[in-house]
Length: 113
Length: 109
Image (cartoon, one colour):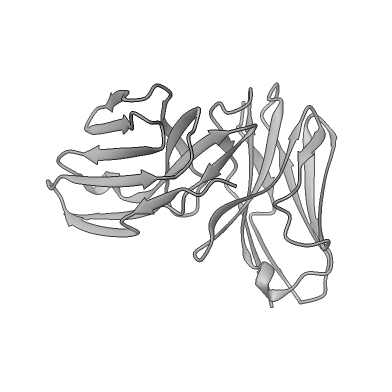
């Protein structure tokens, strides 16, 4: 398996634009997580899914953020409209079962100017 | 969200030195994981500790879980430049992992 695949690796966008981040989890993993990493706040959990169903989105900072998982092999994190304070590295991770090893993608570095 | 405090935040040492980094919380965790993250990459799991008082060794790395399952430490013996990276602890509670901010380690030759 190629591991967790995220795209794009880098995204630069202007304030107010819509941004969509994509993730392909490891096949067979039941859990998918979206995290955001900044120097100030570290690695923050935004939302996670179990069997494609959103379980906890309490970490999503604002209504501008939304996430979907239409099937077991694909998830998106959308920010609309984007703001400069959204600049961060966004990671997708998947795990086989709850609280087992989380496998991370390489992340998407988002810069909003 | 249970908070995990890691210390020190930054550590710069020379090759061959020993070091210990800490992960503390006021909450009890069913298990605790340690990850290492290199620049431009996602975190990679090093070890999982489950039982209070448990000690696990991974070559020159020794991990300990506190008796009360609220804290953990990572000790590196004879650090090498390849140990450079961000060390993150993550507590399992509920269905997801909550991460500390990490200890950024730099080992110079």
